[in-house]
Image (cartoon, rainbow, N blue to C red; front, side, top):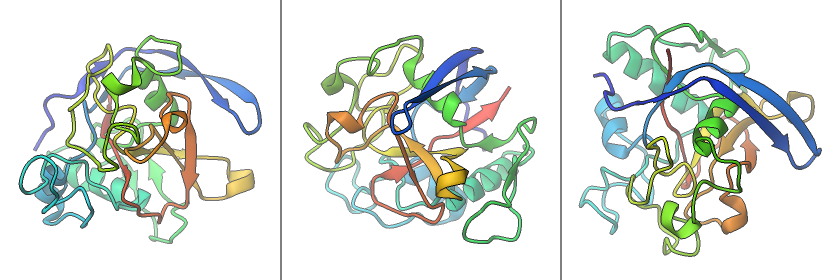
Length: 232
């Protein structure tokens, strides 16, 4: 069950910024592969046997009758890494994650970045891929690239319905937020993990390449999903 259309992302570097603390840091990014859109209900169900109920899922009024092409939401960070391992195993690949004892804080989860299986992108990988060589607030005109509060009807929409960035990645801005691997600031927020990208309910300020948000790894909400990455 390999995901054949993953996009090859070249090596490079990215400067990340935390607006709250007004700090910048530079990160080297190795070449990797990233899915062209978030994980859909269709893919999630094919691996897990079922998908979480959400306004964008089966029975939604938007798009396909069963909601199969909408991003899966109502998935926690732990749900996402567990899905990555299950998809890796189903595809004959080496799982990236050691899941530990399963405590709610998930701080015992470890990632083998050399494994060839599916994983979440790091925060640096995510922003680097989102920008695709650009340096502005976002990689295109908001209405052309994203579903957000101004055009979504406050509904999560089917994936790839808006223009991709220069590297062929859809929905990096808008539609649903996406979990990343990283802890946000463990000294202040403990186990909280980063998510990126903005969603269908957000104003333009939330739909920027640099916008960072965070929550506990058990959070499940109707505009937060995830996207698959693989190391090269």
